[in-house]
Image (cartoon, rainbow, N blue to C red; front, side, top):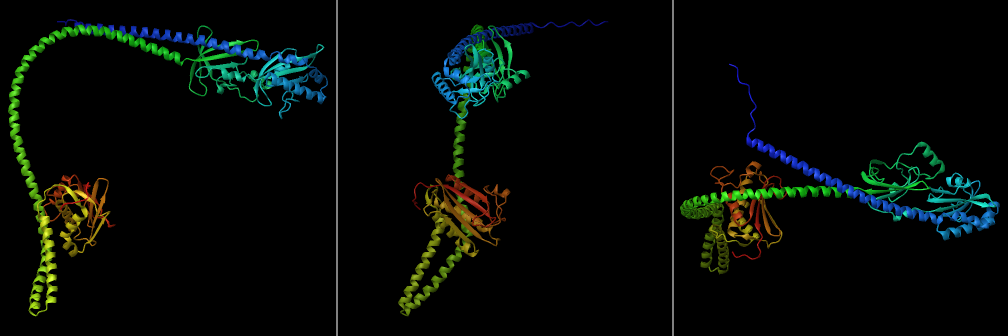
Length: 631
């Protein structure tokens, strides 16, 4: 039996609805972008049109000011033939007296007209007199027949020419006019005018102004770097012509790198300039100046216009987005209204269920509160027992230290007791023999021995008593001395060299004196144990202070502490001593005591005193605010 052909499954209703919604959103997005792009284009064209109108007005003003300046001097060369001395000099070029009078006359006219230079040229193109005759680089005697304006004037055509002077290198505009007498040409009168001052009044900033000659060479501009550059590469024959006339003398006339990328209405165009800096896109407008074949070029920066167009585009996008959001917000409000009504009904039902749950939870919390109160009482009792055990453990550690020192203390007390017995017997015999002075001396010695025994037992009683743990200002030097007294016999017996350094004797730490002595005795004992097998035995104590801390360093010359052991030194019941010689609680208790005073007990590798190896423990305590102690 043949199988039935498979058929495409039509999309479900939710799928068709999603597809239609997606299509609608895409169409809406395309429409919004099209409107925004139209606004962008319109705004850019409007801004460019404003720039074009502004540039045209500026071009008219610049061209008018240039024409006015040149018109002031256009008549001046023709008036020089009215001077009889000028005519006479051209007729008698060898008369030096006459030449001097003409030089002075030209100097006076030049000063009054405020021109740059005025000079007279004969028919061979040699300068006969000049207004700058007093200067070392005077034009008198120069051959200027190669200059186009001289050649034009000799052909009976009034010459006008812009060029760079070959003597001083000063640029200027040259007016040339033939000098005639009775209808016969005798020479040429030339007036040089500086037109560079016009550049100072041209616009500065993003916009640029150029004045070019017939070959496209920029000779006046508001951008100094663009002067004597060309708008386009020069043809070889044009370059040869310019070199022959020396119009721009020694300037290289390199291209400016300007390229036209588009044209707009009104004779303007869009150009790019990429020479010596970032690429600039500008609006170019030009105006020809006949009959000189010059051309004014005004370049307007398009960056503000395009920035304005971008702002219009963004504003259009934001406005349309706001409109879409407003429509969506209105629809969402209506949908939320319906949902709010349903939610209110669901909330009422949930509220009824919540009341039941709250009642059940309240009962459970009351029971938990009762249980927590009982647990809190048990915890407080446990903490109290823990503190008591810690205090007893500290006291036990003290007793252990006293037990370790018992042999030395017994020796310290046996010697005075033996001496007391012997001297007491001697005193009795001396009294019987009526030797009272010697008996008094023996009694005084007995009193000193008793005082020494009292000092030893008093120090032991002070060390053995329980501390009240209330911190106070403790003189560090006194605590070190008291702790050293308890191990003094062992230091002497084991021939340990003890050194102590302290900057000032009035250093006080905020702690308890008895507990600080316990920490020091523990560190001294450990140091002596570490140096038991060392050839060099040196125990060093150094005290330093900072603005708010006191550092007590205890260093030995033993074998040192390996890195892996230093990490466990302050752990309870950790010890490196043989079994039966320590419980491993001394450093743990000492670290806890220092920490209770707000300090730190740490270990460092190396010992003081210049001895290599060894270990060094640092006790860091708060500096006491007062310098008194109540023991």
